Amino acid sequence: MAGRANQGIVWLSAIALLFPGAASLAVGNDSVRPEVAGDFPVASDVRLAGDLKQTRFILDLDKKIDIHAFLLTDPYRAVIDIPQVSFRLANKAGEAGRGLIKAFRYGLVMPGGSRIVFDLAGPAKIEKAYVLDAANGQPSRLVVELEAVDRAAFNRLLTRSSNPEPAKDADSSGPVADKPASLTGLADGRLVVVLDPGHGGIDNGTQASTGEAEKDLVLAFAVALRDRIEQGGKFRVVMTRTDDTFIPLAERVRVARNKGAALFVSIHADALPRHEGDARGATIYTLSDRASDREAERLAEAENKADAIGGVDLTEEPTEVADILIDLAQRETRTFSNRFAQLLMSEMKISTRMHKHPLKSAGFRVLKAPDVPSVLVELGYVSNKADLRQMTSEEWRSKTVRSVAKAVETFLAKRTVSVAPTDPK
Ligand SMILES: [Zn+2]
Image 1 (cartoon, helix red, strand yellow):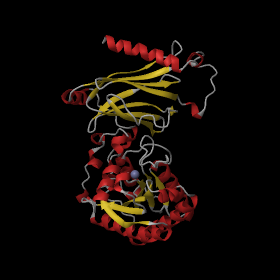
Image 2 (tube, rainbow, N blue to C red):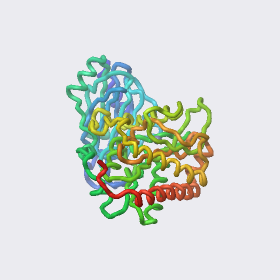
Image 3 (cartoon, rainbow, N blue to C red):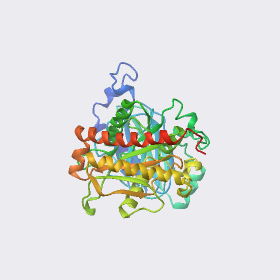
Image 4 (cartoon, rainbow, N blue to C red):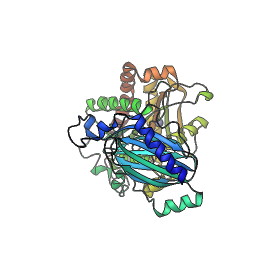
């Protein structure tokens, strides 16, 4: 313990060295301090200390905040929920860990709420998590102290104290199955398409070596696609996110079902690890219980990890959605999903390069609404230079958006004729 106390002192002096001007930040508290970016607290620096037995995380803040800490398992994670914070940390902050913290991520998980997720090297407990007042020339600091424990102790902690509050969106997690589509989606007579830009907030998705994140590329594409479809005026568009917010997979499915969507399109961008060679082109995925090939299996596994990345535990999700078995998906829904996938491919190949096997299937969690035809489009590979150049080009985006919009409109137009707005059950 003495060693630990020493460590603390070393830290405090290190902070003083790093922040010679900290005193002027701290005085004056709430008086005239020029604020930027919507008055959110600003996190300006982060440090890790310690070893595999004890690890400390320190985040410098410009004001005190409330925190809520809890643990998650499979994989071992510690999560700190905080009010919305502007993170102004170094670019690669969190990628390299130390001691019990393998890596950490941070970002927005909902409007007004940010989150820090630690990937742990093994079972550990949150020995302490607190926020220090600005004092003695130091800024406010969020401090998390982790201590290694054995697996049994970790599991006890999980069941006893850390019954995490699910993300706030779970408030709306009441039964959705019995909400007839005709009451929501079709209220104004127009069919609804739900566009689902993948990832967001704390979850970047794939990332190009030059820094472009999947979450930004797919959001830009989805927004342009929404505008295009809405211009047509025939169909309504609902987005699962319109900003850089993390949305759990089950919530995306819930949006599609609650809105009585006639179509759900999840938009992503893939990446291939360097050692697996180079791949390029767009791929369209539908749901199946058995992956069509290894590549599809790898991808579904990666995409299904989004919840773990965002610090959402599958067990927190209402079982009604989490337990939906693929077998229960209505045959008709699958037929429609495949029909749309075909249609989408024939339109997309006019405007963009397709993968050599452009139609695949695998067990994507986000495609599991049993009553909403759903596809997942990988626009291309951020790991491929040519694909990345396309995906960041305005010209490519607008012509590809046109093709996707055309496929959506053709598909929905047929459904309008043949499907009366009835209760899906
Ligand atoms: Zn993705």
